[in-house]
Length: 472
Image (cartoon, rainbow, N blue to C red):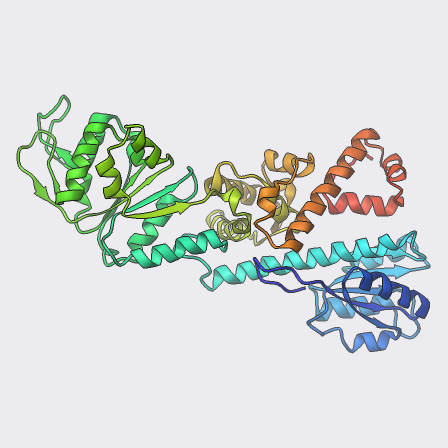
């Protein structure tokens, strides 16, 4: 099942091979009822001729067939199309056969006759979902590798495409830009992207956090000072506006600057002149100003906390960065971006996310926005023992959100195409159901399976698929 990120997932194409025509017809009807495109063959040799067909996503193979066994066909599939998920079926189940099938790369192992029709459709659905998420992983990796990002900004949502468009439009100009968004959304990255695409890109980019400095120190840092102008001023000092001459200055958390500094800043924007603290003469500077804030400046202006004239000088071009929780489709490409960065930084061959881990990241509510996601991925890369990040490598709060049955945020889900949203909501419900059922039965898997009306082996597979821990 091949799909590009952000598009609606297509139903998988399924191959079923079984020499028992009654079982074959039943399997075909069950899967077609679920909306799958099904190719049904009663000859294993015919199945061998199409193992390289790139359109198949899942293969359902009977083990015991004349002339060519399902295990032989499994090996052929895994050699020609290792990305295809294979489900084995047999009426002659033994532990040895099941072990051989799993070692050969089978995704699941079903015993005929089926306990109910849901057994087959459930197994195929999970296999198709795993294939789809793996395809999505690869598509995202390819997207990033071929420049699917805007400078250091990464995203595929409509909100971020709108931001990219504004950045591309305003970068060649000298217009002042005001970037508004919650902490951690990447406001400085937007400012750097604008500078990098402007005619000033070879000149300085100077960033200052206005909220991190006291009133006196902020004025000194921005405008400079003369020796003796205040206690501790032991020498003349050039301000950051002078240091940024010809380039760009980024004023982060502009909403926190005091009234006196607002007046001085307004003069720089109006006249292009700065006056060092303690000086009588002015200096001309050619600096583009990009400001950012996580507060509503329009509201602060109405409340008298921010100068109206300065607000309009800053708000020539407005850029709004939405929080990450409002654009969950941006989580996978961002996660892959940070994965590549930190795997290289720490020197580990961690190259992918498991489908369950990627789902957990996508459905988590990122209150700390992109910065929190970046920290999460850096930690996961350090913690991961293997080549891919699993749910257990993620921080505790994400694991608890994933396994503890927290409600899926419907507001997040409506940002996604129907099939993706339905898949995530379904998995979240199933995980909550399994976790609650185990808790109700004090961790006894047999009792929980009986209460659910599901055969024990299938119940254990469900627990594994959903990363739900069981005590026995």
